[in-house]
Image (tube, rainbow, N blue to C red; front, side, top):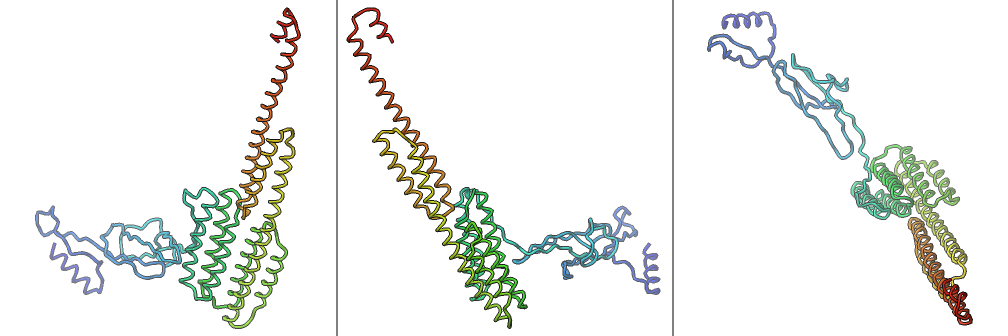
Length: 386
């Protein structure tokens, strides 16, 4: 057998034929330690990442199924490993085949930009607790902005952060509705941070980014105010036109666009605040009127209970006047309505008991007087029983 193997090698060398890669030959243990040789063929399998950088290279025995675990992560992108292909950017194989020759495989990866999402804990079961957690999330984004952006950009982002906190504080509705709004604000703030972090190289990119932020500010101002305020609309279109018409070098356009955005954001916040304040005043007046009208419909309570009901109504109106946000106004009014209804029911029941007692007392007096005038006998007995 050894002679046959050496002869084969000599012929291959003479003919210039390359032999397959193989490991050192091993003695067949079933051959009683004789001269029979068993060849274990091996092949080189290489793995590369999606960019063509080599990850691994090793030999595998023939008919073995090669494998390599690949994962990748960084601060800006999410990477989803889809599988291996025989060429860079090629079609993903359903499975790696058994080794029969040298091979190379390339990772196929889906790359997506990381987008932060706002999650709430189980304890965030009220609008106020959800807002507290959301503002904490906003602060994390601002901390990243302070670290990653230049001083001017960080200051500009700080103004947007302050506005996001303000808009969050005015969110109203059911808990799930408030959470949805807070997630939208968080997403917009994170988007603004990622936009600010990107270094733009073209004037139009700068202008587009600023216009998008202005649109977000406008939308949230209108939502917070509950209507399309004419002043905000006018300020928005004026600022929008100014940015669209900016020209010059990159730094000049960037500085001018940021200044316009900052001024518009300040105007929008001011207008929205004024309208919300006016709306609160109007709602408080209307609520106080409803309380007075409700109390006025309750008749014949008597002097004492009427005075007590008026005092209680005054306490409820004072409570409503103490509300400072739209978000807390409606729950307060709902609670006041329930309390007023319960108090009226209590006083009416109390007055009815007083009237019943007085009627019974008066009836007793009438009967007692009649009995005193009747002689003993049939009629007196019947009246007594009656």
